[in-house]
Image 1 (cartoon, rainbow, N blue to C red):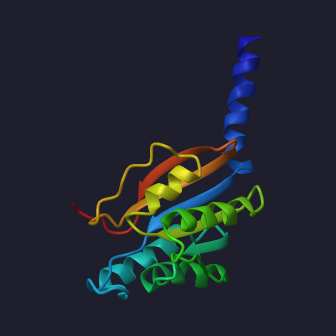
Image 2 (cartoon, one colour; image 1 turned 45 degrees about the horizontal axis):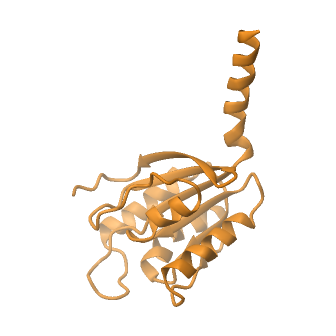
Length: 171
């Protein structure tokens, strides 16, 4: 009986990610300068390409960014590869309104959807927490290579995998 229960539990555990929404959250790639709305540096352009390569076998049904061009430029190669038009979520209502809109857009997607979100160092951890990963670490200003992949399990819970992509950043 224990073997049967263990087999059922393992089967359910391996099936859950396939039935759950997958949300990939990254910070925008390296910026060219410290201006208010900079483009990507050469390293940032390479990281945007690395993101597209990392997600080549996935198919995001929606890509969410902020309206700032560094997030849109980071998402562009992935969007082009998958023929998805990124959607910019406004920042003018403040961070809480931005988070609420992102959560609403994610919740509106099908159960088996893959979603890419490109944010900022101050929003990436907040987005992960809002989607059910309370242990999301704050992000230092010098970190660009963190990729948080959430499998949303319902009930405000998520299974998280934190990985790195592209060239390592050093802080």
